[in-house]
Every structure is written in C-alpha cells, then in structure tokens.
Image (cartoon, rainbow, N blue to C red):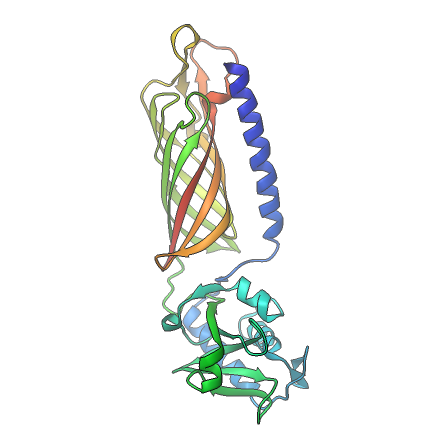
Length: 322
C-alpha cells in the first residue's frame, strides 16, 4: 500500500541520513593510504628524514631532537617529509594504517611490535629488512637502525601498515560492488552493481561509475552512468543520467500505477556508507549500505509514491589502487 511504501522511504532516508552524518563527522581526519604527489619520491624523503634523526636520545612523549619515543619519530618524520599529520600513539597508528603483508613492505611503511605489551613499538621500514626506530631499552637507547631478522624483532613482530600509497601507485582507484536492494513490493526488490575509476583531487576521491540495477518492484533495468565523490573511504555520493529499459509500473491489478523515467543529468542520485572495512583475498573490501533515488514521474499525474523512487540496499565492495 502507498502509505507503507512512504513509511519505508521515510525510515530509510532518516536512517541513512543519520549514518551519513556520523560517517561525515568521523572523516574530520583522512585515513590511510593518504594522498601524496609522486609516492616513490615521497618515500625517499621519509627515509632521509628518519635517518637524519639517528642518534637522537629516547624520551617518552618526545618528538624533537631533544628526545623522542617511537611514535614521536613517525609523527615528526611524516610531518617534515610529506607534510602529513598522523596519529601520535602506536595503537592509533596501527588502526589508522592500511594493513599490509610483510612481503609488501616498501621504504616508508611502518612495522609494529609486541614488545612490553601488545602493539607497544613502531618503526619506519628502511628497505632490505631494516627499519629505523626509537628504542626505549637495550644496550643502546634512542633513534637507530635495526634489522627485522634480529631475534628480538623476529619474536615480537606484530604486523605492518601503510600510510601513503605504494611507490608504483598511479593515483587511480578501481572499485566494484554488488548489493541486493530492498524497497516496496517484495522484500528483495532487486539487485544493483557498480564499477568505477577514481582519483584524489583536493582531498576528495572523485570518479565515474557505471551502476546497473534491476528493479523487480518496477519491472525495469536501469543503466546509470554517474559522477561520484567520496569523503575518505567510508562515505560516497553519486549522481548522473540513466537509461531505463522497460515500463516502470508499481503494484499490480487495480493498484498498479505506471511511471515514466525522467531527470536528465540527475536521473539518479544516492549515498553509499561503508562502516566496516577489512582485507579479503588481499584486497580492500567493505560492507556497505546505500540509499538510491531514481527519478520517476506518474504518467497519470498526481503525487509520486516514494516507494517507486527510493530504494535501499546492503552489499559488498572491493577497491584496487594502482
């Protein structure tokens, strides 16, 4: 019934708006990998900056030449070498980083250790199995270069993380997603997919996407081509024109209502929120929710049933940077 569709639409809109607001607030700081120009050269600057601090004494909470701790070294090196501000403690650095495998380490990446507790130490990878760090104990204290093959570091190695793109990064991100959609009519309204290519511009990821979807409630195949803008990795907005194949009809029998697709360059629009990210098969994956608006107008005139133009979905996404 129309009132049920309207109630669903309002609830979905409110839920997604609240989630989007929460995600937008969480994006006050960027997340790794952070955009830099010429990542290979940037990694070289990180190594030079880290090596320049060798010999500085250890001082808990310090981040200057008078003394520094391990996370203070990372903080000051990234600030000086690539003008990037990163978290100040080992645990927050670990959560902030993009996780990578040990065999993926490149100069400038971070290595983490469980020394006097879980995630208690961090260093900057210097290549060829070596790293620069600020040691707090042992025969020598302060900023030094060590080998990952030393027994202490082999025993306590906890993982690796990436703060900037890899050296061979071209500045492009390919993304793909698949989502069952919910809405008026049957519980499973249809299915949508997306594939796109983006790049970072002024701190935002801007791209183009193809977003084909089948809407069982209306009995149509929708083929949008949209412009997308992402805030961090979690929140993405999109809008664009769409080709509609079929005659959109909501309901059946005496309750059936026919629509025509309109909208021009704004035929479709929506928001995608990805609150959960993880690594799957070596790729950056995520579980997301989306709210989509498609522009349909009743052929017989009158008000548009929100159930005809609004749908929500949950799905799985992947990202490849290259």
